[in-house]
Amino acid sequence: MDESLVVDRNCSNTAVLIPCLNEENTISEVVDGFRRSLPGATVYVYDNMSNDGTVEKALQAGAVVRKEDFPGKGQVVRRMFADVDADIYVLIDGDGTYDTDDAPLMIKKLTENNLDMVVGSRDHLDGRLGHGIGNRLFNHLYRWLFGNGFTDIFSGYRVFTRRFVASFPAVSTGFEIETEISVHASQLQLPVSEMKVSYSSRPDGSFSKLRTFVDGWRILKAMGSLLKNNRPLALFGSLSLILTATGLAFGIPIIVDFAQTGIVEKLPTAVLVAVLTLGGLLMLALGFILDMSARSRLEIKRLFYLQSR
View (tube, rainbow, N blue to C red):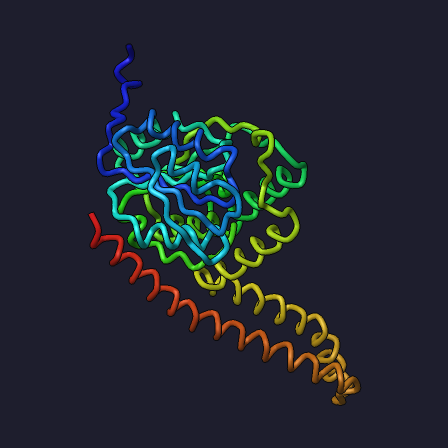
């Protein structure tokens, strides 16, 4: 056997974290899969207000079951990271679409390359057309706003180190949590990588909780908020440029007329130009102020990252 394919599956201080809401039809299979692929790991299932038999099925399969009463995937991930202490964390959706046998290879890649996160990049996307198109658009938007490094920012299959989890603030409440995780890695310039993983259609009787337009809008707003919090100078500098350029477009004819006649004939337009120019200057000043605050937050997160080994 090729030695490069040999994987140590007995990860004694590894935690598998599975956020679940009404996953009765798939949770047993997911838990059993990890008990086979990572027999030394502890499997945690966090029940997020399910109303079916998910808790009972998870307990029967041998998982440690805990509850999070605040709805939303981001709420569950925040609770998981706060409660569970481990050296390596495996985060996976409980819908049965990911292959649990990929986890040991992801952990192997994480440890051998001294990485802080490995993202399971899906080999294809099944399901609703809107999900596939939206996923591609948001991935392109992410790379434009925050830089390259990820091709699947919405993957629900990830492996983390302790220090990544210790430095991650987790402020998102819903499905936008994956975007926040990616931005955190990009802003701290952490060593991360992707690995192709198998991805299959949801089993019969299992339905996606992701709402194409509602959650798409929430993710778009989350990207805007993350851009404001992490790259405020880029955001407000762009707004300043737009306002200033618009002001100049309206103001140049007034300046030319004034130079020729000595009279400001279009007073309302002149007032508009003044407002736009002043707004542009204020946006630029706000960008510089918020940029200093963002740098301070980044330094704090970096310190938490460095304190955890």
